[in-house]
Image (cartoon, rainbow over all chains, first blue to last red; front, top):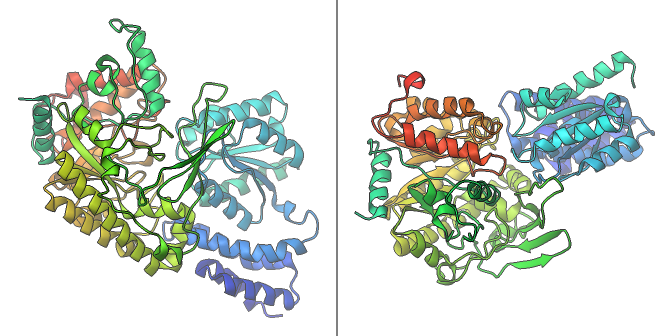
Length: 220
Length: 409
């Protein structure tokens, strides 16, 4: 089987050429590669490299967005073919922008980058009340809850969500990762979050770190 | 000398990098902050309980001087803008139980909560839920109306994207009449990026810039044609000496797009816009949120801008560094931290004092207009903001004496 297809798929993340990405993904499937192998050897390395270059300031949001769109084009073909629960092996993340805040670009990019890194991502959208986060945690038992807040005036909602996790006895079941323009490490420490990420690339690193911790602790 | 002449002289002296009698100041207040500030003021002495105040927006006319933060703090600059939507429409507004949905002359549809949340918090921003430009081919089909249409200037404004929702505001000319004797006026226009994302959406616009740069560039040029028309009419009607350009190049950690892309797509129309502003006898202050690296600021100066706003501290912008780096080539407008400093717990005056007086070093030699680093949000305690203004009154007169916070530039 032609493993060069994986390089083409990885390169497709950078070019953002949706037609080429669809063609290469279909070619890899036709060549007999399993969907999870295509994700692991084609999409994830491409998204990782894109994330690294973003972290270094060598690519910017437009390139991240076209990369994410290319990834989603490929995943749309691959995901229906995955075995049940196969994606969950890398960890499940529930993500959303907190109540009263409607900013979605940063949250979306983090969600796409996490998906590109092999996480199963459940995106609740923007302006999400604490109760919906709690409900999603109860339904999906995620490894990570990722909360975004861009506005200074909405950041206090993160503390409210964490408070409700504690009240409901769910705090020990999930790691809380936070980010957004109004957030920093000091704020994360103050509200008792498990992790803070400055940008999307750092969010992937942090998510791996947090899920690794869970795996070692044998919680999941 | 009238108040407006006095303030305009003060501001323009600073704009020309000279020290006036005091550091000139400006502020844009979010409606939520103004509301909480008014309530706080009412708890102070000497405010009659029957005084009424129209709390709508920084662009509206607040009737009672004692309850108008601009007048109360004797600020120098007032922003006044006409309807600046590319197409002139009466916004289509639908009110449901929990939110209001409206479509603007930018072709975007926005949604905003009607009421406060349980804890009293009022979500300040509208959510953009749809855009009229659905594909790159639609750019060429988008029609612009006359930026000098008298209705934009003489009819009441129903500007749904003003940040304060869907309030019917006084007309531009009524606003000008109400403020022209008391302030140095600054007009306002949208730069290409700002117009682009409002019509197409941020994510779509950013992707178009990679995939269809030619179509984006052509649209940006049309946006700038429109902005120039609006600017010319504002100057004719108000004789404002300053023009505020809404841009936004950065977010918390960096630029939205690469310097190369900015140079290729946005630099040429910006340069054309600033040249047009200068030819009307105005100076241009460019608004760019987030982190703006020195190289980007260098490019903005090359495009001709005279001043940069708002220097968001939480995004790593530092007024003193900018002053040291660019000296008399750039006026600084902003740099006071609305988040960690003014947004500190009520009464944490040491934190505020340290940040504000350190930033005052950037005002040495003029070239500095005092302002917080974005619209003052509802999260800033009124007493903290009041303390900030007390610092201005105490330490903002030239020559500056900053004591332990004094730095050599």
